[in-house]
View 1 (cartoon, rainbow, N blue to C red):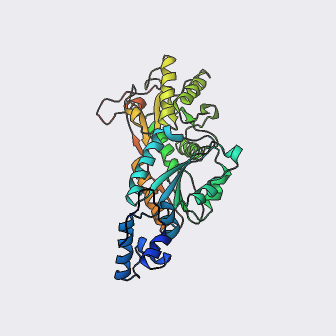
View 2 (view 1 turned 90 degrees about the vertical axis):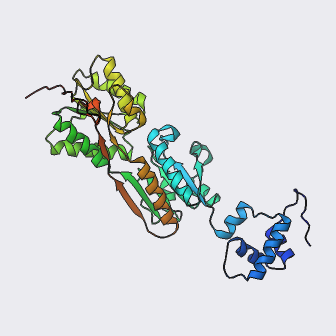
View 3 (view 1 turned 180 degrees about the horizontal axis):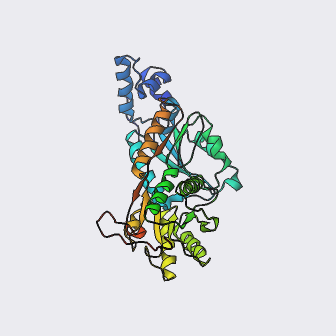
Amino acid sequence: MIAREGPAMKYTIKDIAKMAGVSPSTVSKILNNYHDIGEDTKKAVLEVMEKTGYRPSYSAKALATKKSNIIGVIYAGKINADFNHPFFVDVINAFKKNIGEFGYDLLFFSNEKFASSKGDYLSRCRHYQIDGCIIINGDDIEASIDELDHSEIPCIGVDLPLSGKTSGYVTTDNYQVSAKVVEHFYLLGCREIAYIAGNPKSVVSNLRTEGLERAMQKFGIPFREEWVVHGDYFEESGYEAMKKLLSHGEVPQALFAASDLMALGAIRAIKEEGLRIPEDIAVVGCDDIDAARLVDPPLSTVKQDKEKIGKLAAYMLRDLMDKRTDSCSILVEPELIVRQSCGAKSRDGSNRVPVRQTGP
């Protein structure tokens, strides 16, 4: 009969194997539900474990199974979206919910001390035996992201195209984001369109800028470089960008901001100049964050399906980790949400307010 030791007593797999009269590898197989172990042997080992109170350590499990059941979460970029951007918060929440149902936990990585510590994502992922990674796009992406992308560790990028053999990405169709806005402005009679873009080093921002230019060309609308300014996706940068646009003396009929937060800042700047929305300037943002419904007037926006993006990222990463698929990518269709800020009839049925007309 085996007596349970005091709480300070710690057992190893070797101890359990010796007590049960089996090899450590047999104990390991039983812990990991292998089916080639006889019932009598299994029963004997489980009895020893119960009587000793043995619980395998996390590291022992990971070593035996070659799986940690941990997903790394990386907010990439020296200038990144971080944890306070409402779009990425919702995406990660959806990802966490769905990947959690597959039995995985999340480990968040920091990148603040790369320069001083000479650390990199790949070595840290290997150190923690990460099973896979979700990488959130930022600006000025570190070179170590490319190294991780092309490693053996499965990765899914959000708004970040990855090209590794065990990588994939999911993103909103950013060309369609801009195309839907331009078409809407065109149908409202707007031919003078300004644009607040994101950081020039941002992949997403550049795609939206290219999409905007193409769509405007399609509809015969002049693309004016002086009416394109850059922000960082947050509200204060939208405010400063709009101030810069209005300082030229000429007021555009319409403004598209590459994020709702920048659109909110732009609305504040427009009002400070004594201009009306949408009568003087129609405004459309992007993301459909909760605050878009609360601003005065309610903000028209291009909705990115955050729940769908997060869920797709979880399922795609699970399939990559289980080797059910190779490298993959998915574009998610955006949706234009029309509210009063662009001067059109909103979903609540309120009347359309005509935008300012400057010509025939």
